[in-house]
Structure formats: structure tokens, C-alpha cells
Image 1: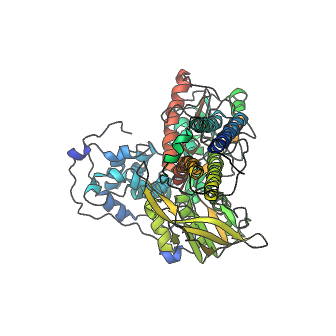
Image 2: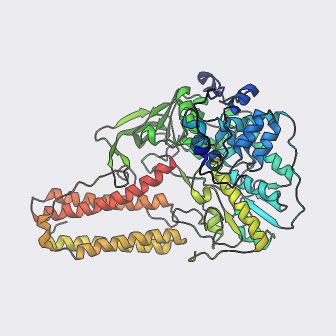
Image 3: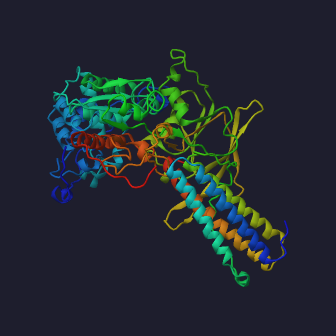
Length: 489
Length: 151
């Protein structure tokens, strides 16, 4: 990992128009893939990867490293691809990122490393994410990954609450520092949002399983079906079970609803439930997996984020004739990755932008039959300069609908806070930390990071928080130093 | 409800603000977590300011009131009522407060519609405009939070 601050990168590496175009990612045909749950993108072949790697300028002070929340040494691993040293390339990534196969698939590189890539100044940036995925998949196809040499045991015990991307990162970093690490996961599979939230067609679950197994081979003790706050409290872990430090990375899994009439009708789902049934509980493979889900013909997904895109594309694959995104703002404001929006559109998802649902309509049996909406327009800029959507008077219309899936955000599950009285929360109900570098909570020895602190964000940001927390935990275990939070719970 | 004088209307409006102060103060006391408690306390403080503004209102100034166009995002207008429950989420707390402002605004709009042009009408419009400002502030806050979640 580099700590350099590349302030002169652009000046020292003058961008030239790249001679070799960015290598396209092979994909399944949109019409075919809209009917199956197999991976949408197929990954680079070896020759694509080497050609794409040759586009990297090997900047002396690379911006891409600072664009990465976990500071992967990107030029180093790309140079190793240029030299066809693929296994060494993945090892270079794993110095700072234990989940390259995951990040290569789901990271918003266009807003991070690739956004600041110098090649992108005069053309399209180097496809860093696709190369990351390539080497991770190459490693998986070429035998078991060798384990790094571990230091002697320190005798310190760390509990990690939640086996999502943040928790897995903390566990990986601390086990490699000689501590005993136990992950407590509430569900029956490890991975958090990687297994319950992101669909198979975007992130095959075998990849997550492989990364979790690697951690277990390193010595991480993984305890599934352990709901902290029910089975054990944070206090019990520390006072009775002998853990020296605890990291809370339990995510933000409590869905928000719109508060409009008809939301309690049959056929209205939170995106969390809909996706969990499909991804974690494999409803799409019923009856192989005994998880029922009704196959609806007309499905509206409310929202414009990545979770909404995952939900609507899942609905298509389950057989919907009409799968809609209903979003109150314009496409410009959509928080979803452009790639995901494009994929959804190519697969046949219908976009109803500048459209706000105002009522879910049902029949006498209590099932959804329609969705009443209003057309919106962007109002005058407010004091912040933002143009907010306002309803167009008299623009009501109704779409025939069998199911409505709500994907408008989530907040923290309150269970851990309710059972840990001295844990301070912010006004939105997330755990308050000293700052995002130390991840120290108001309770001594307890750290937190990821969505439980920031609200719903990305996998890589949770991993970045995990990396910071691991450093802070290491320091705490060595020195015992703590901070003095202001105010009381 | 009938009002005989401008003073009567102002008195009623002050009572409504006092009721709002009590509502938010009581809710805050029921909250287990300091963050939610502080949110309700901040709403109570805001209502106290509204109450003070009305207490200092000189009835003679009412005649000169000219309505300003306050934007209405209408976020709460399509939502169902929500009752206070200890431990409710932050978006729900905002929803509760938005709904209260929406109802107050509708009440004063309704009153303004029932009286002839003159001092009473102007005062009702003034009171409605104040509620519209509060509604807009809350709806903007709510909209910012929801936009981040993908709404």
C-alpha cells in the first residue's frame, strides 16, 4: 500500500490519447440473460486482460491509488498483468483487499479509481475493476490460494459482529496480525449484503463462499446463526467471553417505506425481503430450495438506487411481463451505477422517471391490483441550488400492478443499540464514532464501521471502514488508549 | 370555530404553538436515546420560536401583509397519518412533524377561504405562510435523506 500523496501525478504523466481502446467486457445477450440468473458479465479472457493492462501508463504518482477506498497498489498489479504474472498480481491486490473477486464485480470504479485515471483524461480510463476481477478469477481457476505466513499469536481476542464486507475485512486484517478473531453472523451464511442483497447474476455466491473459506483457512472462527443482541450482548462478549475488542459491522438492514395508502397490501415487499428470498434463500431455484415466491406479471420497483435495479432485474428473471422502475426524480439524479441502469434498460426494464407513487390499490382479497402515480417536474432551484421534484397538478394515472417492491433506503437495525445502553447513536439512529479513521464508539473497546455508521453505502466503503477499524483495533490492543467522547447516552 | 377579532385568532394560534411545544417535549421525554430526544427537543424549540413570534405580533401590521410564494414539495400530502411511538425511526419522526405542519397549514388556508377580504383573511394567510415555511424546511430535510436512499 502506498501512503504517497500524488499531487503532481497529472503534471508528471502527461496524458496522451490512448492508442488501444478500452477492452469491452463480454456479456450475455440481454434478451437471453433477462431469463436466467447466470452472471451478466462474463469476464475478460487472458488476451483481453493483457491488452487492457498495456493501456496503463504506470504513473509515477498514481491518482488511482488514492481513488481507491482501500488503497490498492493499482499500477503494481496492472504491471504484473502486463508481465503475465497473474498470481503475483492478485497477491499484490490482497495486500490491501481480501475480496478482489467481489470488488472487481460490484465496486463503483467509475466514481473511484477509474474516475481519476490519467488515461481517462483523453479517452476512456483503464478498466481497473475488470482487471481486478480477471486476476481474482484466474487465481480461483488455478488451484488453492496459498496462505500467507502468520505471525505468532498475541493472545488477544477480537469479536466481529456481522460477516459483511466490513466485518470480513476487519477479520482478515486482524488474523494476519496474530489475534484470535471470531465473527458472529446472524444469518446462516456469511457475506452480509453480498449474499442476501446482491443477486447471483451480478455476484455469484460461490465467489463469496470462496473468499469466506479463505478467511477460515487463515484461522478466523465463523459462528453462523448468532444474533448479537439476542444470543449474547456486546457486554457479555467483553465481560464474560473474554473478548478484548469488538467491531460492530452489522449493516443497515431495516427498510424504509413510503407511508402512502395501501402499503400493507399483499404483494407489497421491501426490497430487503424480496432480494433475501431470492438471493439468500434461493427462491428462484424453487422447488430445489424450499422458498416460495409469487411470480408476478406486472411489478413496480420504487426507487432509483442499485438495490432498486437489483430488484427490478430479479423480477424480470422471475417472469414478469412488465417490470418498472418508478422514480420520483430524473435519470440524472439516480444514485444507481450507470452500468446497472444500462443493463436494466437493455434487459427490458421500463423506466417511469419523474413519477411518484401516491397509492397502492388493492382488491377485496387484499392483493395489489394497481399503483396510482403522479407525474413530477423539477421545481425552481432552492437555496442549495438543488431542483427538487414537485407534483404536476392533475397528472394522476394508474398502472395495473400485481406487486410493488420498495427500494428507497434502509436504516440501522436497533437491536444492538437496544442491548448496549452506553453505545451512542446519532439522530438518524446510526452508531456514532469518533471519526471514520479510528472507528471508536462511545464504549471503550468497541469499534464500528460500514453502513451501521454511515447509512447505506457501497461494499468498498464498508471495506475501507473495516481496514481503518482494524488499524485502530490493533493500536488499541497494543496501547489500551481510548478517547473521551463528549456527552452521555 | 369562530373568531371575533384578530386578537382572538392570534390567541388561538399561540395556543396551537404551545400545544406543539408540549407534544414534542413530551415525545422527547419518552425517547430512550439521546439522538431522538434531541431531535424532538429541537422541534419543540422551533415551535417555541413560532409561539414567541406570534406573541410579539402587532395586529396593526397584519393589514400590510403580502403573501410570498413558498414552495410546496407536497411530500407529506400523499402520506397517511402516523401516530407517535417511542423509538420510531428518524424518517418517521420527520413524517410525523411534516404531517402536523401540513394540517396546520390546511387549517389556516381553510379559515382564510371562509372569511371575506380584510384583516382576518390577511392574518390567516400570514399564519398559513408561516406553517408553509415550516413544512418546506421539514420536507427539504426529509427529501435530502430519502434521495440518498434512492427515493
